[in-house]
Image: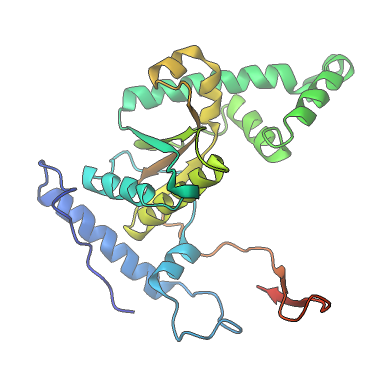
Amino acid sequence: MEEKNIQINSAFADSSWDSSMTDIVDRSAQAMKKSRKGEAMPKQSKLDSLEEWTPVEEVIFKRRSIRAFKPTPLPGFMIRRILEAGRFAPSAGNAQPWKFAVVNSPEIIAAMETDAVKMAKLFMWMLDYSRSTFRRIFLKPFSKLIIRMQCNQLHPVPFGLLRQIAAGRAPVFHGAPTLILLYEDRRGVSCPATDIGVCGQNMVLTAHSMGAGSCWIGLVKLLMYLPRWRKFFNVKYPYKLENLIAVGWPKVKSDGQVPREAQLVDWYEGGLNSAPRVEKLGV
């Protein structure tokens, strides 16, 4: 597949653009080229209407969530292009129920990390009944009730992550040099949360297409329990802040396919009295 050069739009270019940034972009382009040559794509057994996967499909299949970043931030023009991809995402009624903010300050990100860890420790102190016999007897009913009320937020996966963070074994923001905050406008049409997801997907795919790494982080919600951070980031009606995307240069090469569950897809091709045809998608 022919490699496409990354074009720098003058509208997004920094005034501080120099040869070092050119080197960065060249390296990211070379990284994409090597990735395309060295990794096998999904088998096309039943998806062979095209001879090759399109560049968009390649980005989708190879993108991975990155949880270890180099300290050097992306150049400003790349961050703007990532934001622009989010701005052009589809939304119900074209309401575009979002607002963005970029955090590039190491001082601010370090303070966010510290306070998020404190909140994780507080939640574990309140909810983790496995730490002692006393807690299992007296705290378990209360914890179970809270977990049932917040079954998505306190699913075993995020609950386990909170425990790891509280114990100092996992970071919240993964040392990323840049955080893109996704504010959700609750006045949006239909389901603004869905629109935020589509917007964020545009961003992470764009970041990957330029050789950068990204990770969707919902634990920014920990900071929203603290008035200090709600005020700092000006989070007030109609906006709420429940998601951000960490972006930067990956520390290690980790792109590639991740195993996915096979899906049984119903195809309704007959009449109203016909049963659907079931086709297995994936292996």
